[in-house]
Length: 303
Image (cartoon, rainbow, N blue to C red; front, top):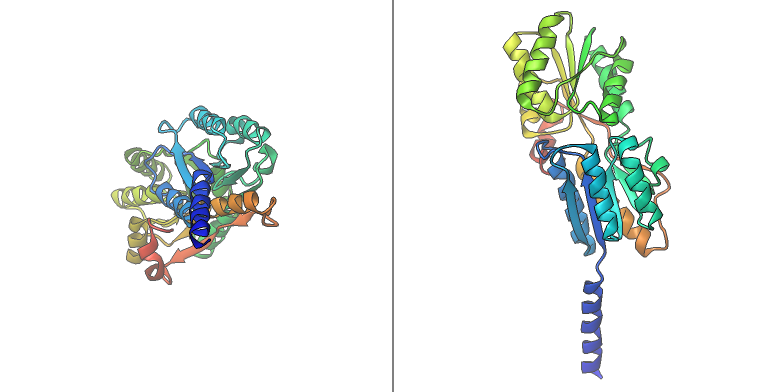
């Protein structure tokens, strides 16, 4: 009897492993932004914790049509769930709705909070971007900024536009946003040109960590006195805060954006549709000189 029970248990384990849950994550990135490997790590960590298979994909061109095709390809494999960032609901909504119509649960993350329910997603995990921008702008105003400039590396990304619009809502004044691209050389060149064209600019918001690092170089090259604020963490941004080159950065805790959707989908699939009662906000939070030492070791790893 004991041998029979052991054999039955072993067979159950083999059967269970043969039918492991499988989740696919697709994000908008050209593979150059240091933000996304932390998101991917979160997804892989969550999948390992529940014993699920995990796939991560992005279109290296950064093109939304390419990303939509990745969503369609993932749906064709009938995974147990798809996790997708949503920077452009018009471009990606059709592919996401088709996946949902095929019976595949979808959770959006990072960008697309306002559009998530409209494309059929179960919920969204991410930062309320306009609110984060407003907090950054209000703090910049309190710290003496009178005229701002927002650097946007992805002009198509509604979440980044929300950050910039929120910044000027908190700061006051009309939106002053430029497209700097994801290329660090262009970021430096375009930032320097904007500062030279308008010497009254005394505050910059960079909505990505690599953008903030490049902007800092441009500020130094021009010799301007600028209040620099960032979004997200990187070792370079942490060094800038410690050196006094950046006033603060907004932490959206991107590992949570990768981790929590996998857990949400697992619970949904294994507990008769269990879901949190609301979207999960992963931020915003400020990192500045007062707490940079506490989180510096996590920058680029878990945050």
